[in-house]
Length: 136
Image (cartoon, rainbow, N blue to C red; front, side):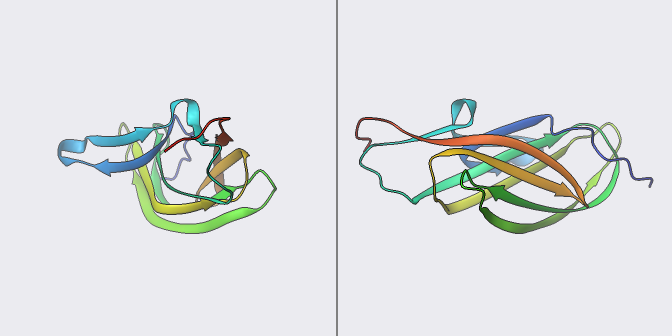
């Protein structure tokens, strides 16, 4: 099988949890609209939260080693995380589900999830924001 890297990450969804179901379906629980995670004014930093990512690649083909890391607003990193290798078959998508039962986000601001297929990088953003009222 030849190796052609995907041109982009086509779908990126941030949620509380992502689960693979039978028949190729995926269940998303607690989707953060626009990738905006909002915590209450009563929550202190760093913020320990459940966090999951649904990532889909439509183009490309071949077998790829996979890993991910998260870039923090203060230019730090969470990870890297080794992921199972993936095989991209023509006319089928790669679906990657990353679940963190609890991950600690240290800062408010913009985060970047970076996924590597072999050494090629794909990035998308999400944010951690704090509301001015208490959330229970």
